[in-house]
Length: 220
Picture 1 (cartoon, rainbow, N blue to C red):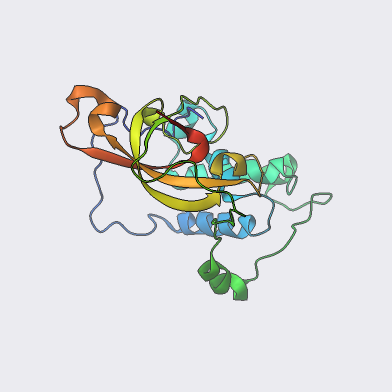
Picture 2: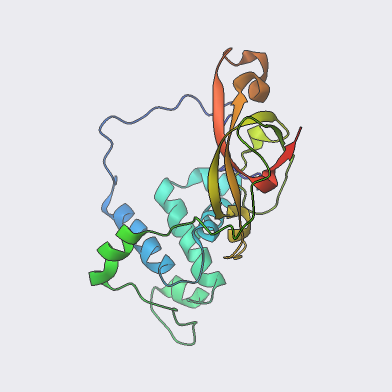
């Protein structure tokens, strides 16, 4: 999706200004926003890529007016409504009602540390499927303009690069964001000359490496 979240490589946003000694959270509610999102995700009604798309799929005006964790809450509200776990009336009132979809499972407090330490592996068994590309191969990224989630940044579309490494066989984020939990493909690290991406204004000799699934690439 060519949404406001895909700001990498664009002009007009100014330099990145890291905050020295930045705290994990700037307000107590931000920690609760993170905890609510993780706990709700553990109910098993959406993938992590669906949750990413729920956060990014909004207008530039809304996206840029919200702080980082305000976007998380907005995305969580959308998922809970779309999956029927809450109603609009419940959201507006802040009170639980009835006749909503029950969670598939519940993350109990005593299970949090174990579940978080286990994580959610996204590597999959290729079941004999071999990668099309090998290290050193020249590839061109496809000029994809999907309406849904994609991990191919807009600045790296229809560009020529080189396979730097084969990263394994992983859940395909674009399909996972549509709820296709079994979809997986080969993932590569692809290196680009910065001038291929941004022209002669880029520093000579600079390179950019991105992770790219096989459906993003074609031989050239």
